[in-house]
Length: 167
Image (cartoon, rainbow, N blue to C red; front, side, top):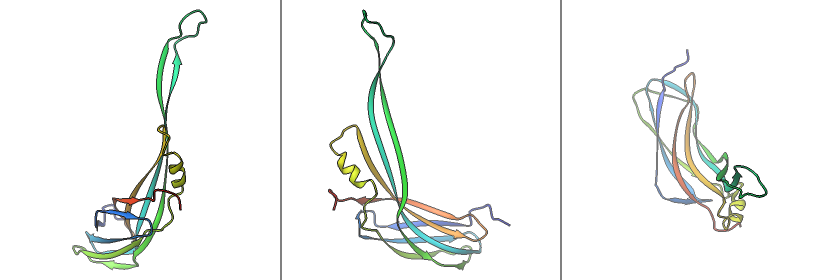
């Protein structure tokens, strides 16, 4: 039978500071099962969300006439594109059994890969363009794969500082 209740709760603790590419983030993952469960694995991902926004305006005329003044409205147009990918990952738990009502802690060191996001160079090229920009949002996501139950996840935003120029 599949357990519809969340079989465990997760917590993430780490130092709230700026991290750089190539650095490690030391994390404590707290695991609180609500019942006796079997866990297949646990992993910690650094997820990067790349958001491209292009803003502009266009004039929409009310009517056309050669001998009259053309009136109309200016409309603001925005185009957005969002891409998300796992930048860095580490496994912190292999197959095991957990007892309900207890709390287990795992110390995890996630090595942030030195490779910048795919659209990093594009973001540098658009720095002087006020109408277009790439922004990057970083999240730590812990996932525990629970056998015969709902997988548990917890996420927290983290600050990753990117270099000022391409390497």
